[in-house]
Amino acid sequence: MRRAYSGVGAALLVMAIAAGPAAAIQSKCLAGKTKCVSKEAFSLIKCEWKARTPGRPNDPNAGGCIDKATAVFDGGALPDKGCFEKLENVATNDCISFDDTQAVQTLIDQCVASVVSTIDPMLPDQTKCNVGKHKCAAKKLKGLLKCYFKATTPGKPEDPNTDGCIDKVLAKFDGGADPSKGCVVKLENSPRSDCTAPIGNQADIEAAVDGCVDSMVNALQTPSSTTTTTLGTTSSTIGATTTTTAPTGSTTSTSSPTSSTTTTSTPGGGASCSATGLTATVGLDYNEQILGGVSAIHVRLTYAPPLVIPGTGTSTTVRARVTNLAGAGSTLSGINDRDLNTDTVDETLDADSRKTTGSLSPGPLFRVLYDCPNGTPIPPSAITCVLSQATDLSGFPFPPAQAALIGCTVALSPAP
Image (cartoon, rainbow, N blue to C red; front, side, top):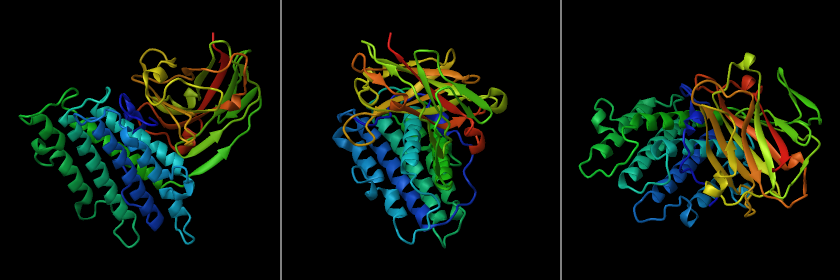
């Protein structure tokens, strides 16, 4: 299984945006990308409700469900066939952003993780109620994105709520003037209900979907950019802060991306695998005096052979290799080891770190234990980290200029 969202607790952190734009930018390409995102997100949630259907396999990727949905979006082995790429490759395209398939795919994954973990925070719970709640969320998400699709289409009214489009979708989900008609409430109040905990979470599901849609709409309407930075072996400056190398025997690489920018570092040095493998300690680097604090952040590690993590997806063997280091009041969720380059070998590890109260302090977030042959030298370029969806102490995303001041570090050491 390459991707699964079950058991991704507290993933709402990556979707906490207060409100979407009042009016949309219009272009055929943007409208097309909005439709691409709608189909991908709906398809992934559909995979989840299939896994929660009594009598069916409880793996969301059963029958390659997730793999197929992803391949439609990113093109799979043929990237040029990806939904975004086909729009961007039109000679007369009017796209406002380019080469953003991976960034938006990550956002969709986080979105689905947020919605699914709000509905069903544990492993897939197979009940008709659980299936129904996923359908409620998926239909609302699809409905809202359809309103934005219309608004981004040239010649259509720019207000996504034209003719009450958004109002109708919201009312269908929450019941409007009659809360007892809410989609989730009706499932829970049915005399034949088989609903299990959490109960009474319609508002939480609604908030997850709303934040999800807002984040994706804002991402689609923000031109993407990519920056590559080469760092030395001793120090690097990120905004107003300085990152130094780790203690002797380990090395540190640093990157400072925003939600729409990816920065990759290539420092010197390395570490060798011990008989028990190699540890990579991921750290957060920013100036608390300037930013005030970070409440949550998404981290993506990309690693190269011979580094290996036993298992795949969200399996217990994967989660057992990741240790939370952020201290009391912190949670580490969304741990997911996947094959994103379709070579049948996992090379991408995602995790969401958050502080339930207060701030994630600069310093270690979590540690990953990799298997590798004893004595094998591992350069720091073998593992890169990328941050996205950083939120402030109020739970709102940092503006791009501030998000650019937040960096991540990876310190490599022989496993003890």
